[in-house]
Length: 165
Image (tube, rainbow, N blue to C red):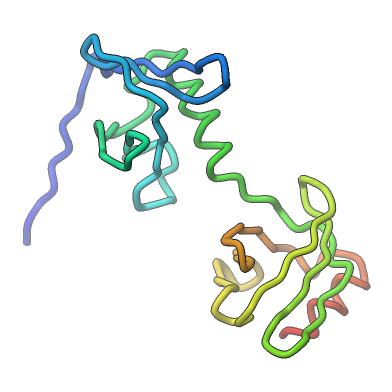
């Protein structure tokens, strides 16, 4: 059995994140400026502040940050804001309707970001069960939504959800 060893880095990484006038994220590392850059969470997603890949616009990796705590406070704040934008996961708070036409499913829901209508093709391929009463739903455009606590939602939401269970 192989053992994985992670290096502990005491001093902050010598990378600094900042936003340009147009709001895009840029980086400075080793005296060089890069931008725009994007931050990508690598697996496991259960460690959201660990193993962050810093990538250039063309997809090339600039560096891997083992943990965001190793950044200076300003850069850590910018990184967290960028990750929140990229990995936004609206929670479904109410199900107005779920209907099926052919293979397509149409959902009308209220989310933590307002009312939304979305479509899914194959229902069961696009509903990932996280726990016994919690799912991540992916629509046809790749956007994801969290659905949990249906048993605590209103009667209409519960009746709509029963259509797919």
